[in-house]
Length: 615
Image 1 (cartoon, one colour):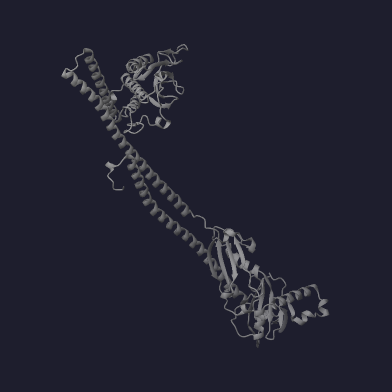
Image 2 (cartoon, helix red, strand yellow):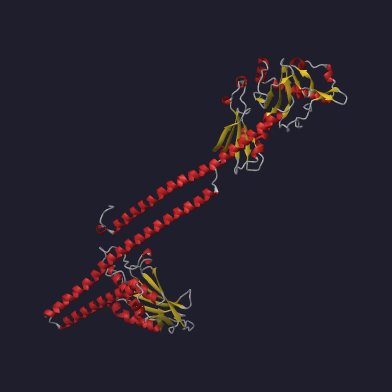
């Protein structure tokens, strides 16, 4: 079918092949374009994801740096500051005084040698024998002393009671740490001087170091609540991030990544801590597991472990589906415009090709119909002419009939040829063709006379009645802008078309053998006249009404059509009306068809009495 000779194909086959070719061409354009757009948008989305991942990586790097600075600052605390009393030498008196430690204050938020530690519970110290003391309480604490408090402590001041209760609370929390108990039982061996971390007590973090104090080694450190400490650690830099959308940050303890042995002593796995950052420059807030929106876990961004001593903690970044960036938005608009342009261009070329195929088909039909229109009268003229030449027709009346038939058929051929030539000149805007149409103002009564004179013979021959009406308030003296010859050609073509299709349909009702011609003033423009020519024939559909004035258009199939004609009569009518600066439209009637000509007029202010002139 693709390589079939177009000359041997019907119009439907050529149109079907055009559809396949247009569809294939469109797919050849859209498929590569779709693949290109798909990978292009995927790359843009990946670039956007890489941007957020880089921001998350940079945020973890900042948190690691901050933790390193805090370790250095807390390591600057003197080792003797963990005793309740410190020996202070007074050079003026040459005496050594016992002064309370700088860590002995009760307020955990009060700055010491470092910046305030968020969530700080208090400081502690264990000696090599496992005895506990805190800078806020002057005496060591033990399980036995806590279980049997002496009577003097009951009489102590409120401040001493508060100090004791706080020291006891720190001791009780530390006693729950199996990692600390294991360290005390194994002995305090030499380790790094920097603070290290235990977090086997749920809800708390235990920072510790093993410095040498005098001749023995001690375990010193401080206890903090996990959530406020981590929230401060993370939210401080979350508020400085550049995220443009809500981000869920999860701080999760992972025992599989632990390098120390304390996990074997842990009874419960620390619960993950969730933070929500709504947008940049806003404070982060902690979320419970049940309060986390489900859509915030749709798009994973980045995950990485923190440095020592938090290397058992991993930060996970997630958010909802990434929105379209401006680049993606502009690219989408461009892609959509490109696709619409391609679709519009392909559809335009397809419609143009279909019209060309239809025009070619109409031209073929025109050649067929013209050949038929020329051959039939020429055959009859030749036959009668040969009969007259041979002398076989003896009767004078018969010879006159033959002469009349030859004359009428030759006039018919002449009109057909004149129509074709005139239409050709009008379509190509030839100066000679245009010069033949010179509209001027003619009275309505003269137009009525032209209609009667040009259609009377044809209508009388086929027993048609002509009904002509000039509706008030239109005056008979109103002048209409027409070319008399062109107007006559218009009327003749319309009348011939009416008679031809009436006879072809075989309508036998004599009441329908009439042609109504009405002159009336246009309802929308007082300076125009509307001439309606209405028949009572078979009529046409509304779809055909829109095509009646197309060149070569004829309803039906050329091979099965029984009516004569070439398909140029009404097309010529439309061209002639336009040349007279008028308009023509077709309207479906019940029964029949109405053609309405709108023409320019003058002197519409001259009114006649409200009575019609009928012929």
